[in-house]
Length: 573
Image (tube, rainbow, N blue to C red):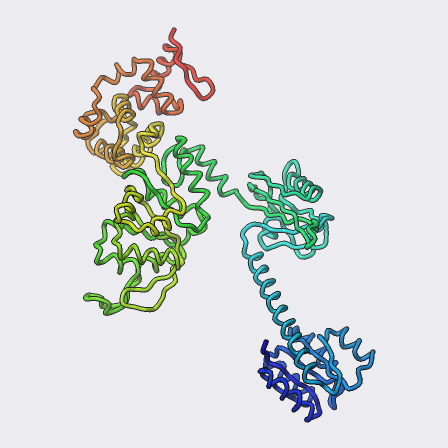
């Protein structure tokens, strides 16, 4: 191991001899005869090892040793002495000298001391880098982290714990007493249990008050701290603020909506849960589903629900851009890269820097662009067209398709390695025909939107139309329903949309016969279906049936319709 070494000795012959031995071994050597000059060199240059004589004309090696330690320098100091008395050696070792060697200095002893000192410094430097990295990670983690010894005394905490619990430096060394407050002291209880048992403890979604009194929903994880003998010396406790997720779930239960996605059916609840799980995880996501199921809305929800919501979301429709332009659009180009490239241009990857890039219809990429995209996913870097300079791609990639990508792989259309890089996690969107329970919510949503757009006051659709919507297979999914509703709004001049307002093609495909709303609403089963499909919201059910609420109440009474638990049963009198 080679190092940079300083020799301080007021005898020129010793400096010359030591320097010659060390240089012959490959070390870089600087020599000096005075304490003042040595201190100047130590300040301006970084030395790996310092050899210093204890007795000097303008001071002592002990003074140099004290100054090196006072400045916090990590270079080992080796004392050289012609009179290795017990008191002198003891003082040097006490002050932190690495070693001492007696005069006359033998070459083997000198080189061995240098080798050991350099090994010690390298190990200490590595340990310091490791400690600095750990501290940086500890500070940067968003979860509150605190460590507690077996006596429940606070040892350390990060900034997030200070914000959530109100810890300050004066709390270190004292029993923990500032955990988020709950009615049953839940966090104190599981901390005590973990310290007693030495086993991990977990607690999810606990309602509590933070240090500033704000209501929060917090999840806790507690793990034992073990020494080299495997004995527990305390625990580390992590507290995660799940208030945001909890509020989203509350809104979801109340409104049947997540971001701009409408639906409260079980298939959509699974989609919402997966979106929330992936929102804060910077991994590639593949969204699959039939055309019109809302893949772009899911991509927006993934972006907006996570930590990147304030960063750019850049969309790329792979089927809408010609192959000749797609590479330049994605990666940018430099001036003169091709005919018409009159200036440098940023690609969409650069525009999405720090945020999300969304590839719609990913199955339409050309083989050349597939290869370049694969490199971005694997190495997180790319080159602009016409340039050899590498650009870092600090973006999250979300892709969507309505095609069978595995089939495209088998046909050689899509690269297999790209397929598996894209499909790290897949979100499959259900078709509308498998979640018809969401149709009432969607109809209400489109009514609200198109009333505002066309400045109308249409309440809903007739019961005939509603039944047709429930029976129709919707090959175009939510987008087809949206277009059907928009067409109806353009034509409708009444307060309720009827068959006359629907597209002719829909009338043929739906395959249902028209009947009067009054006749339909005279059927108890139809009335019950309207109530169940609107979660027994009387106003919405009346609008679906094309009758007023007073009439609906009379029919509920006449048919003996009741709602028991989550189900409504038809009781005929």
